[in-house]
Amino acid sequence: MLKIRIIPTILFNNFKLVKGISFDSWRTVGSIMQAVKIYNLREVDELIVMDISATNNKSKVDLDLVNEIANETFMPLTVGGGIKSIEDVSNLLEAGADKVSINTSTFNNDFFVKEASKMFGRQCIVASVDYKIIDKEIVIFSNSGKVSQKVKFIDHIKKMEALGAGEIILTSINLDGTMKGYDIETLSKASANVEIPIIASGGAGKLKDFTDAVKNTDVSALAAASIYHFTNTTPRDVKIYLNSEKIPVRIN
Image (cartoon, rainbow, N blue to C red):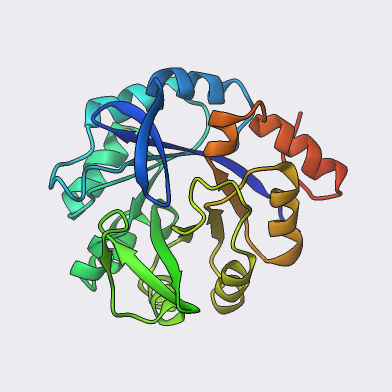
């Protein structure tokens, strides 16, 4: 079994570090750079940084901010939000991102992921998939959870893999920010249908949630935000706990 990656997620809106519940009720929770510096000292395996306003405001991620974050970190950095073109991908990678997360544009341009993967390598391209459970069906959303897409869940993640995405961030909108645990059932379906790594996102609220996700699915990484913002739990605490449960993690 490969070592499970522990990945904090930083969401920002107009330069403010924010967190919400189910992609709504956003509130400022601190400083972006302060959070980055803290995570840099706490043995996180990677960092995900998302501009939640870029897609809907038709703006682009601030390259100077990405560069500042990249200069403060020693771990791989994934950046997403408002990625619409090959130029956007190139600019983010040049600014210091190691990976670029694409969501809305995967629906607007069928070949964007394929082209980006071919040009920069699939290891740099991450497909971000946000979804809700509605009437027992998995419904995919774009535009920061505002627009539902008429595509089947399994078909979409398989398509992302076929087009060249190197991994998938799978986020439950229902559970986002609730700290009620990961969506084990959907994560299991996803990991059973694609071979590329799945990053679980949305719902982690206690240490057992992390072990439940690993033991009951084939996810490769565990992303979380609220548990780190609103409790005393740190990424290192998560690693120590997983290690005690005989789950392989990178830990010093």
